[in-house]
Length: 248
Image (cartoon, rainbow, N blue to C red; front, side, top):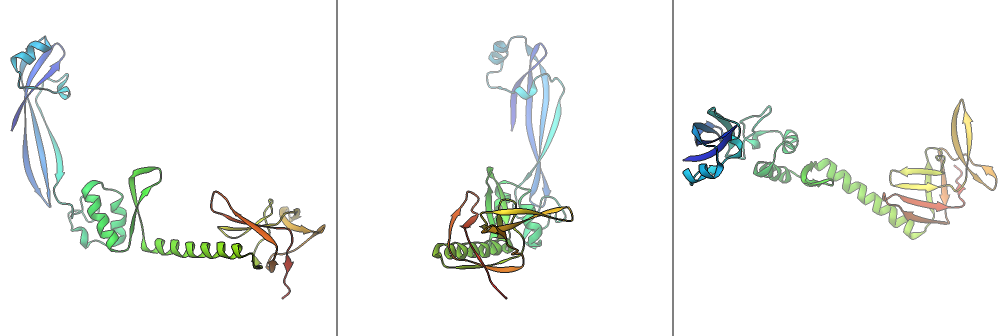
């Protein structure tokens, strides 16, 4: 199909013919070759040019041009073949699943949806980026399992502090300068008062109870009277005034 178009080059409005050829490239793809053929100058006046060629379209891409040229673009009809990379032109179902997870994030549209369906069938999960609803990423079955374990442990920790039953904690490190000791990334115990000490030029902090420092590292302590809160980062913070060091 040939399209007649009007462009503008310097002073004159110009007449063009535009038509496309389709060439099969195999592997579910083809090329579209668009031929832009310059015919002649029409008129200095836009309206006069339109009146002479009322069926022509106005094509802004022809602005400033008087030389014919061709452009080529590649189009994929298939969605089940790799379009680039080490598996280029191979069936997507023939590739290893880890590579497919990477490939998913490099493509878009129907092709990406096809790849995503295969990943989901193999235990992956497709998610939207928090900063861009149109940007997707995949979560592996291993990460999903870790998330489930983390949530189960987190929920169990919440139930424990909700019960207000005594908590026994093995302290693997001294608290920080603010008095917090994190037993897990999501569970922090707060010693209300700590004192700074030094050892070979390095500082460390010990909790203070009744005016005395307590060495608690690598010991079990029991906390009976406490309150808890959950901050904006979902950190469970346990507040208490006293604790007991358990004897071995």
